[in-house]
Image 1 (cartoon, rainbow, N blue to C red):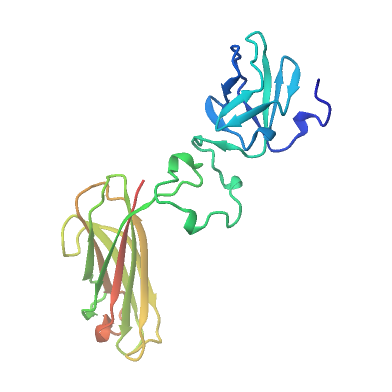
Image 2 (image 1 turned 90 degrees about the vertical axis):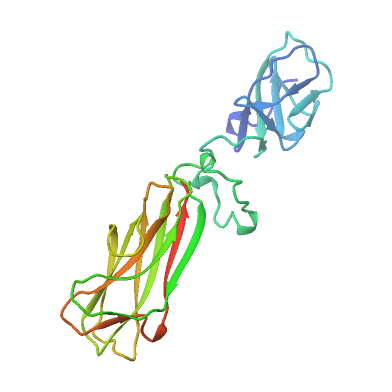
Length: 267
């Protein structure tokens, strides 16, 4: 009996599966784009064989469909439609896009480290994973007394696991003006040599506040993303300096800590 009802081309949320090649047996493997396909149930399938729509005369187990009777090799599979989401055993590269993810659909409890690779995500969603995190700190008081003279404050070290990795640098420096006024700058440099002020300068930030004196602290925040292109240990340095002719500045005054966080971002 032919199918009577709503046009199948108008049914929403339909998966079009690969046509079957009949060989006179009753069981066959369902596939979509040559990949095994697991339907939600037999009731979700609609199949046309030699111009006659079939429904309810077969069962499914995993990706295997078994008809109630053998299907002759002379019969032709016209099309197979699956209503609903179904289960695809292998997700195609780039198949998961932002539009396919609902708001708040992915929770922390559902995320397994390494389960979702960037190859399976659309390029707009692919994010590097954090390979390692290193924390450096100091509470050694220093005075930034001379205008535009760099003073080595402290450094953190990290060894990238791959040349393609990037290093996210987050640095917070506690600073205080001795009597108010003036400006102070902070810089981030990195190289493969410990200590000193040499190396590649990648970012700088500036405190410009005339109100802080010996009773108040100001936080200088620096952040940058560097591409060292090496698997050797690198040194990420915090440099401070006074930037004008105002009063003297101190960092880590009264043993207050400054911090640097280094995070390896894997490609």
